[in-house]
Image (cartoon, rainbow, N blue to C red; front, side):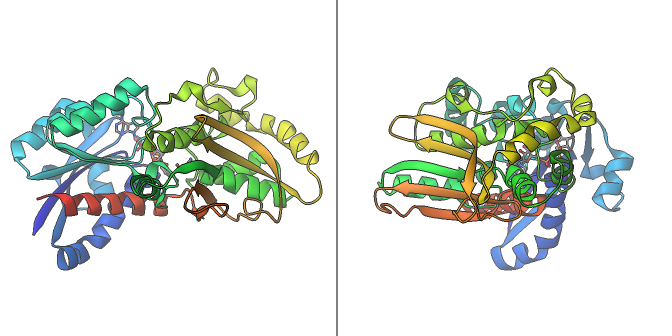
Length: 357
Ligand SMILES: NC(=O)C1=CN([C@@H]2O[C@H](COP(=O)(O)OP(=O)(O)OC[C@H]3O[C@@H](n4cnc5c(N)ncnc54)[C@H](O)[C@@H]3O)[C@@H](O)[C@H]2O)C=CC1
Ligand SMILES: N[C@@H](CC=O)C(=O)O
């Protein structure tokens, strides 16, 4: 039996769903894969709970009663003292501060599984140094959920690339939340602010939905795929059409933005009015490999086209390669949501566990 200790950072939509999924999968994993998964530590942005304090309540109850403020050093020290064989830090935050701890975690024996896209989209210096650190310490970093949530996008792109096929273009609807919003907004008579609130309530958006609306989240996914193809590109090179009106941009606090989302209704209403009868709005990403251009924009699509027909929070990725010719390899399915994303993290945890000896 291989014992895997998992430290979970971030217990919002995705992190808390992951804990529930692990708890449900535990006995099957022991029985079928000889993997014994254990969660000794759970943390959010301010508080940590160590299992030694457990009163065997539900984890939520233990966390709310026995958690304390923490510094990362305490967590690292706790893990070091336990001398566990295999430890995985799961990053289910959207924090740019948290990724600054990755290198220390790796040097202290942690593998990393992450839903957070930040570490893979900082400057190339950071990106390359992280990979060197992983190599030097013989540690793994899995992040399939960075693109397409639970969909197997990164692995597929990597497999195609490693097989020697030439990828010329990747194009599609990369954002599950924006897919949901534009599907609903294009087909129903509802103000945009209402569909945005619904997407937030469903846990489809980033913690700050402006990360989706500004195009940053889609741009990050494009950049992650570009770097998988060994392109040395930086975030600043991406052409992004932001959908956040100037008066609601990053200089406004998140709470101010939330109280003013009705200001989105007019610009989006006008954009909808400009559509022809058989068109819908779609927010797309496009990576052209040969000329290394990355573009994120809102387009009008024919309802009957592949992108126009998308439903719910579906994402769609078209991967154009030499071998596939004019008909791209297509991957479609829910591109956001806590259940599918947590499943993707669990799948990475199991994949990683199977590689450990
Ligand atoms: N919701 C979705 O459909 C998908 C989400 N993701 C990614 O998953 C991550 C989490 O998303 P959600 O669960 O929806 O967000 P959320 O806002 O519901 O939860 C975020 C959690 O992170 C914690 N946190 C923030 N800073 C922290 C820090 N420095 N240390 C420890 N914990 C910290 C917060 O306290 C909170 O518990 C994000 O990076 C998002 O991009 C990826 C694919 C799909
Ligand atoms: N906010 C993101 C969540 C997954 O990365 C999206 O909408 O796609």
